[in-house]
Every structure is written in C-alpha cells, then in structure tokens.
Image 1 (tube, helix red, strand yellow):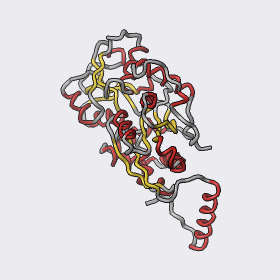
Image 2: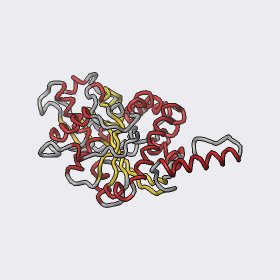
Image 3: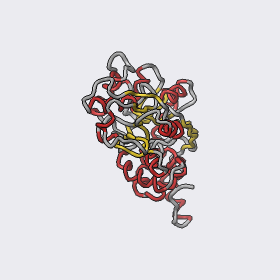
Image 4: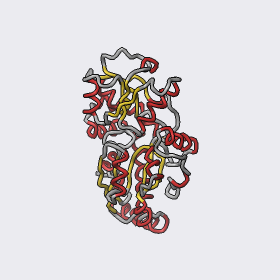
Length: 328
C-alpha cells in the first residue's frame, strides 16, 4: 500500500493527477509505468541496504513507476557475478565492489548512498575479556571473506593501532547471523566485524556484545554504492533515475517515521523492535541526501583496492562510476 493517501475530492484529485502526469511526461525522464527491475542486495539484513525493502513495502518505488524483484546475496562478489550473468539490473552494495568494475564487471556506480560505516561494528563473544580495541592485538578477527570490505576494515584497525601485519589474524567466517553466532559460541574467533544490528541482537540474547563501531577508527570511505548494469544504463536510463528518486524519497520517509521504519526493518532482520530501534538511532544519519560522489571517500576507496591486493595498480576511479543519474 502506498504510504500517502490522496484526501482530496474526486474531481480535484483527477485534475491534480492530470497535471502531475503532464509535468512528468514533459519534464521528468522516469521509467515507463511499472517497469520491472531486479534489484540485488549484497547482504540480506545490512542496514545500509534495507531502504530497498522499506521503499518497496511502502509502495514508494511503485509510485515512481517501478515493480521491484529483490534478491539477497551473501557477498558483493556473488552479486557482481549475477550482474555479469545478466540477471541483475541494479545492485546495492559496498563501495569496495567498485574494484570488481575495474576487473571487468559490467556495471557502474550510479549513487554513493553512504559515506561512513555506523552500520558495521566490531563485536566480541559475551564472555570475552576484551574491553577495548587495544586488547585485540594478537587475536583472531572474523571477517566475511578475504578481500572483502570487512577484511579491509580489519586491516585499517590494525594500521591505526600501529600494529604489524601479523598482530591481528583475519579469519573468513562469512557474514550471516548463523555463521557469526557459531563462531562466537565455539570461540573460533576472538572478535568479528559485521552488522551493528547483529551485535545488538547478540547482546539481547547474551551471545555477544558490541565492542566499538567502525566509525571509531574509520572515517569517510565511500561506504555504500548503488550500481547499475551496463545493460540497463544503455537500455533504460530512465529506470535508473526513477529508482534513485524512489531511494531518496524512502530515505526522507525513514528519517521522519522512526516507528514505521523500525517495524518494517524488524520484519526483515528478525531482530526485535528494541534492537532495531537502537540500530536506527545509530545509523539513520549515515544516508546521503543527494547520491553525490565524495572525492575524499573515493580516494580512500582507491587506496583500499591496493591494500587488499584486489588490483595491482590504483584504478582511474572516474571510469568506475557515473554521476549522470545523480538527481539535480
């Protein structure tokens, strides 16, 4: 159900609708009515990607002429593979997936949707003796996979603590709730970098606890991106503009309606409204208002590609994104 109801009389509503339709026809390059788009998320319950689900459930994307099919993946690389296979139109993921474009993934970043990382944190098992980042020296840190965003963030933590390359042992354990929970219960790792909401939920269930948010040691790094397949850029650029308009409208709605947002997100994650309410307060400010690409964040991202050995040489970042679809 759309989140706005027209309370005007039928004749008034008809006139208004005709005016809006005429204005859209002559001035706004939206997609055709109910254009079907397959949208991928690099993680099912990551807070920075849930506006796709929120906007879809509220009818905001349909208001912009789009019918979404949302697919969840458990890594950015698998999501990019699906784009390459031609089954994905738009993809919501981390900025680190831009390296895959340099390697040949047929897509481009079309929106920087977050610059920082409050949606990610370092967590530890509930019975851990670790009380600060300094206590992690010499211990095992869980990351989603080698070469991932969380792998780089673990390296950044070690670098900013002044540690050597072997002072924080990184272990790929996946990013799903079940895998991280099992790793904590069996003490396979001493800490993990994952979704902030996951550790808040672990606190509620006495499994783990949040140690520090990633924003304690990492600033602007072009954290989140929306990508469009090269095929969609060529075939239906209006659909991209419509999606970004719906995305930004969803962000505005979320900021103004905490209770409704928390209810929807709780249904997506399976975490309690209390957990998602805390998460909302920590992360709602991370979303950008305009999709614009930040040069400083892109520069940090460029460095990360070399740190992770994803690329042999720093890429020309201008070839990995386009601002042609950024709303005026």
